[in-house]
Length: 101
Image (cartoon, rainbow, N blue to C red; front, side, top):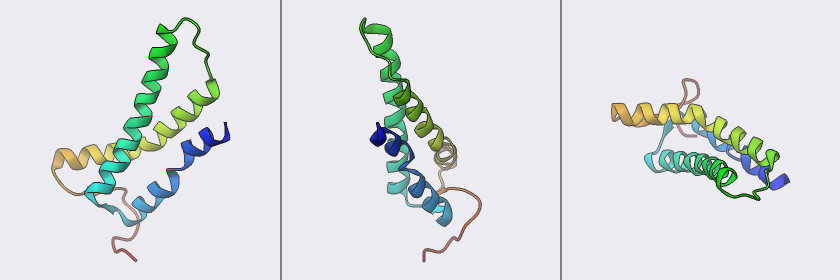
């Protein structure tokens, strides 16, 4: 169960680094977006299986970790969608250095 919790918070350093430099390369932005979508689809799978499998065993710890992970992505999703709508490079966050050090 520790690995499930670790997976939920493992994205924090990546998101912090992206926010620090603000300008995110297209490939990196799409990769992080797809990671978040992957976890969101996992949650949908859990809901589906709990409704259709008669002997499905609920694991609320796993559910909580999945929700935490998806909630960490919400701000990134917002900036990703805005960049796609405006057809501009992804600029994640308002603070930080614009230069890569």
